[in-house]
Length: 341
Length: 147
Figure (tube, each protein chain N blue to C red):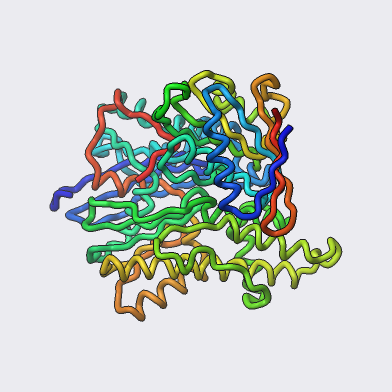
C-alpha cells in the first residue's frame, strides 16, 4: 500500500444473506469508514432454519442498488471522488455472489473506475486493519464463521498462508445445528450463546475434538453428534426444561471455544507469532473473544479483533481489503463459490 | 442389496474408498441416515478413493461443493465430484435453482448427496444408488447399499 495517498473505495458485499455497501477512506495508511450499510435478510431466512440461496439472491437483487445509494448518501462522497470499487467474488453462495459482482462490474464500467475482486475470507482478516492499530508480524489469524473455520499465517500484510481448516463442519455451522436440534431457532450462534450465559458449562462433558492432535485442523461434526446423544437421554418433556437446554448450550459452547483457543495458541507458538487475530461471524461470540484475548495477553502477544459489527459480514472489510489488492479488468471478474485462501 | 457392518469411523471411511473404485462417471450416490450416522465420513472416503487430496468438509452452508478429479485409471470417465448436502432444504426446488440438477447423471460427473431423502423427487431413479446408514450403537453402523 502506497503511503500519503488519499483514496476512497466503494465496497460491495453479497456473499450470503447480507446485502452491504461501504465507503472506506485511506489517508496515508489510516483507515476511516465513511459509511457502512448492512441490510441483513436473517428475518426472511429464519423460518427456513438457514439461508435459502434462491430467496437470498432475489433479495440481493431488490436491495443492492438502494443499499449502495444509501451508503453514498451517508458518506457524502461524490462518485467522481471514488478511486475504485471492491466486490466479494467468493467464497459464498453462487447466486448471491453473482448479484454483487454484476452490480460492481456495471458500476465500474459506467463510472470508468478500477474494480477489485476480493476474497471474502481475506476481507475478514483485513477487517482488523480498520482498527488502525500497528500490527506486528508474523500474525496467526483465526477466521471462524458459519461456513469456515481456518487458521491463517500472515508473514506480512499481503503474504497469507492457510495453516489449517475444519475437516468437516464449521464452528458456526455446529452452533446452527445444535440450535436446531434443541429447537431454539436460527441463527444458532447468538441464540446458543445467549442460552449458554444462563447455563452451567460443566454440566455435560462434551469431547474437545482433535485438541490433542499434532496438527492444527479442526473438527466439529462429532461434537454436534455428542450434543445430540446427550439430549436423547432425556424425555421430550424434560428436554423442554430451560435449565437443561441452557446447560447443554453452555457445555457445548465451552467445548467449541476451548478447541478454537487451544489450536490458535498452539499455532501461534509454533509460528512464533507476535499477533493473534480473530475474525469472522463467530468472532462476535463474547466468550471466544474474552478467552482468546486473556490467553494472548498472558503470552505477551498482541490481540486484535474487529468490532462485533465488523466481524459479521459487511462491506467495509471488502473495501479495506482492496487497499492490499491489485485491480482486475472488469471483463475478467469471475465469482467462485468455493474460492479458498 | 448389500448390507455391510462397520465398527469405527475408519471402517466407514475405508468402505467409501472401496466403493469409489467401482465408480466410472454418471453415478449418483444418495446417502441417507440420521445426524451423526457418518454420511460425511463415507463421502470423505469416496473422495479419497477418487484421488481427491483436498479436504472434503461440510457443504451444508453453501449446499454444493465441486471438486476436480484427475483420472488415474482409464475406466474413470468423470472429471468432477459434486458433493451436495440437503440438510437445510425445505424444498427440492432449491437444488434446481443453484444449478445442481444439471450435473445429475452427467457422464463426466460423480454426485454424492447427503440427506438425499429431501430431494428424492428430483433424483433420476435409473442412475441413483441409494446408500442408507443405520446407527447400531455409538460406533457401529449398518450400511445398506442398493444394487
